[in-house]
Image (cartoon, rainbow, N blue to C red; front, top):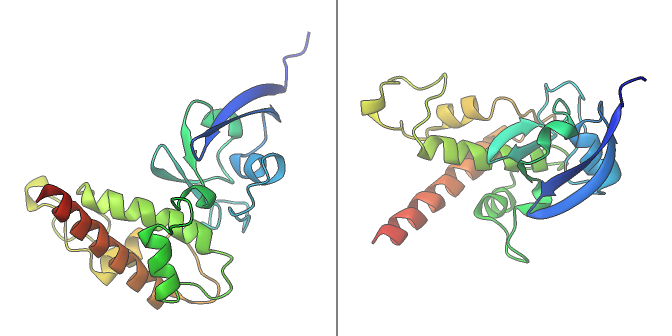
Length: 185
């Protein structure tokens, strides 16, 4: 008997469980877009090079065109549709809107998901290739434009809105830091 090439899986997307049959070769991107009608995540290059399909898997960035849907079972997937709190935009979304961190908007969902992870990675003290001093005792480097550009480098914008994207990420990071300081006070 030939081994099965499909399964019924349960994915947790934006806090909601979805049970669906998938071919084992189905990417997370295709499952999101074609089976769950979550079309905010975009298909760009379909090779993991442009970042348009970036989602968060357990809070970490993932290019969903390269991840198999079966590999996401049991993990928490957040798409652009799950970023806002009801009608209230997430501070990263608001910063992109306020600072025109988009032009055509095609890459924006992936940029925003990536920015969410960048801000958390930086806050956790993770260094990047642009970090001058990577020793743990040095603490997180300032989230400079160079740091942001390096950390966001996996997300391409064909319209060239990079200056505004960097400003939006910086503003959202400042808002996160201010909110954290307020919570500690």
